[in-house]
Image (cartoon, rainbow, N blue to C red):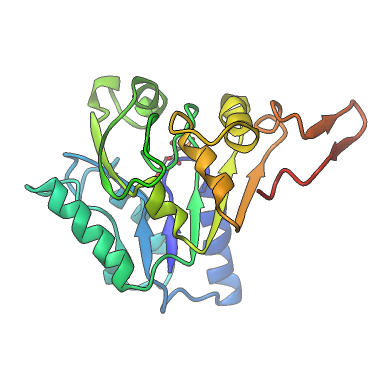
Length: 230
Ligand code: F6R
């Protein structure tokens, strides 16, 4: 069971998996996939819905069965029921084995905007202004970014057996610093990952720039103690 994030951060991972599928026969025929989140009110066919995004960037290039790729139904007439059904779907499938995550510049994971309860389940969240600004790049007009999303909760995410968090660029450095080295608090939902025993954080130099545990110099770049595993 694979948990998928959308957005820019996981794109190199998806490109690599597609390449391995093409060249090495890596197969996803028996894999079930679950999206982290979905905007409220964008039709399934809307190019910026996360369902459309993941089909375009990953799913249609591999051999996963289309019926094995799931996302929360942001178009449901009953959003609360859609959230409950999504939780059940994940549980009935046996839970998520590996969850890929990006991180918002405000420390969100999924669309768990600060503050988010660290034990929250899949639910409707109102997007932070900062998130709507950050994601406006995917839309023609900033005001087209939906106001709300359905998102797996922090508690849902923490039940994945392994988690890989990806971040690149200086705009993520404060979020990474607070998530990895700061206190575990609802105002930094990603900090909850400190409570999980199997998390790998993969960052580039810019995203790692705020970490006290990263030791920089002009000619060498050393890491002490292993901050990429929390
Ligand atoms: C996307 C998601 C978000 C993004 C985060 C980072 O499904 O859940 O948490 O991972 O907003 O987005 P990018 O990677 O575009 O910077």
